[in-house]
Length: 461
Image (cartoon, rainbow, N blue to C red; front, side, top):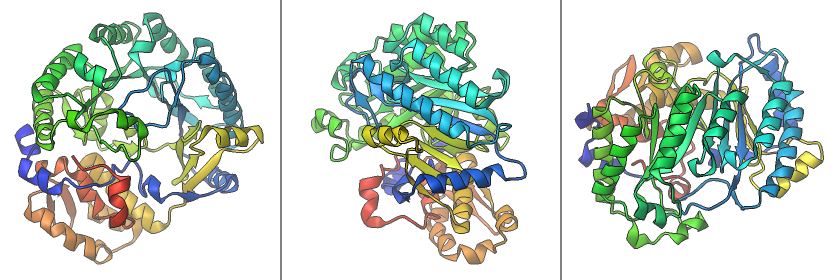
């Protein structure tokens, strides 16, 4: 299958900036909203005949050191005391949000992201989890996905034991590369032995799944060096792998200016790495989920894709897409009643709102019927590489061929290139189109503004 996935000529032709579609419409389309709009969306969500279960995302922005490739919302500090008022603000935000949602709505998923969530002390993590369980109803461990991102350099085996006792059952570890020259070039020195120690501890203490994050296209990487890295990572045996293409955007992210342009691998080298990644992981038994995600066949992510239950949200691919997503912390994004809401992206406005006993919302998007229709199409293609146009017609009461006449015409050249099969009943992404599914989805995106694409989105590959 890997040979069919990777078509270098097509990849080069379609390698243009397009959204990653963790949402539709995408975040650049969000506009200013206030807490009254968010409260209204929650009320309407509560009034549904069968309200969705809940998913909680908590953003911890602190990192003790900066990684030069990073494009996340973060605060760099070694002073752990800076987290004390932030945790208090999170507790206050949880109290505000917990009072809005009906008590019977179960939490099926939580995700601590960042930044570095394990920047927090154990007692602070205990405070947050205790408050969550006070304000929200959690489903049992075997039925929920409770995950946290961690930096292996910042934790030890006892921390992994502690996280499991708090209820976390999935771990995601940042690694990026194990080559010491590359690590030095991006200011992230992380011995492989430390990563192995944390993965072993996760297995010992009964975590359901582990994910490792890698990046290709970093400074000083070569095909041979990253191939060696991947061999070592495969030997560690994680359940999932996220292998991202480094997007060098120093004009947007100042920290990336620490990376020398001359140290970056060429576009051709990156393509060679991508081919190698696909070959090695498929040969090692991993399933290509989509874009930059791979999973073992017995992992819940692969099973969800197989049975049609895979979803996509702001954390990437998910098995719990039928939840209302509640974002907490600065810059976090939620999705309630199908509409999007984002907190203030800067610390001071976030703190000021909480101090004023207000929800710290800044932006959002209320979807119209056309947005919901296009979001469904994009989600199905991104997650399952397949769309039944007949099901869309039944659900949204439209004649697909007429409603999307311009889009269907635009898809014809993708049919000619072998990316998709298209007929009156379905759109089916071919193996050659799976790596380019973002391009296929972009045809249905009515908000794409050509002059802004370059500054807002990374290249497809």
